[in-house]
Amino acid sequence: MTIDPFTTTEPQIVASILSADFAKLGSEIGDVLAGGADFLHLDVMDGHFVPNISFGPAIIKSARHVTRAFFDAHLMISEPVRYAPAMVKAGAQSLTFHVEVVDDPATTAREIRKLGCRVGITLNPATPVEKILPALDDVDVVLIMSVVPGFSGQKFMPEALPKAREVKKRLRKNQRLEMDGGLHLETIAAARDAGVDWFVIASAIFDAPDRKAAIAALRAKL
Ligand code: DX5
Ligand code: ZN
Image 1 (cartoon, rainbow, N blue to C red):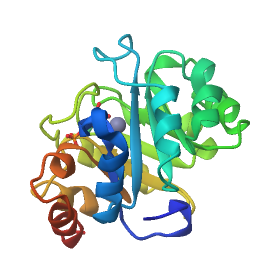
Image 2: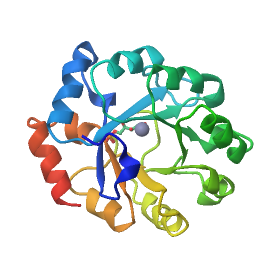
Image 3: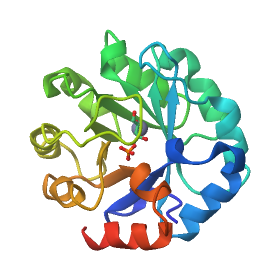
Image 4: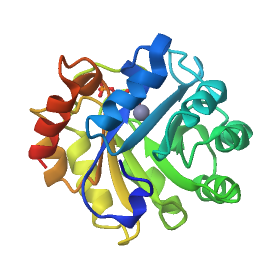
């Protein structure tokens, strides 16, 4: 388990709880962290920006009570600045917003940073990298979506790889490159080769019969 993933440049396996069984979320979290996941990715969806609804601050707060692991919240919501304070109060330590929902991404990043958390920016597969460049100096993380956001278990989109390369060459040493969607044993090495630092994985961990073995096999590819 990694308490502050910015203190290491080692590749990080980030378990996305979207594929967890929410009836037993505490033990699901314990299971993947004991199984070797470095920290947790929390997919917040509003049914507006994406065609699915997941969870919000109440679940993050409950999860916060069962672990000290770093919480990376992926805000798939139309009004990230409006809900950011509640996410931080609930225990999220990094908030990643979508560039598609804001007019001025650098200002949004600075607004979120005022809350005392880390800040990430992300973009849909259809959004060009140029859109995020004005905010690059103001974020800690760039998240490249390798599926259309909304659901776990989708097929990896290789178009994400050149975008990752493009971003990686512009990042400072204290910034991290994250990829999310469709990562599994057959796709994770290509993401690594494109410069990804943080690998977000839901179904390839949670749906595996032996999660510890699944995480070890994924890490062996990095
Ligand atoms: C998709 C979410 C992802 C998702 C990944 O909208 O942002 O974090 O949980 O799921 P897998 O790893 O199954 O593609
Ligand atoms: Zn996500």
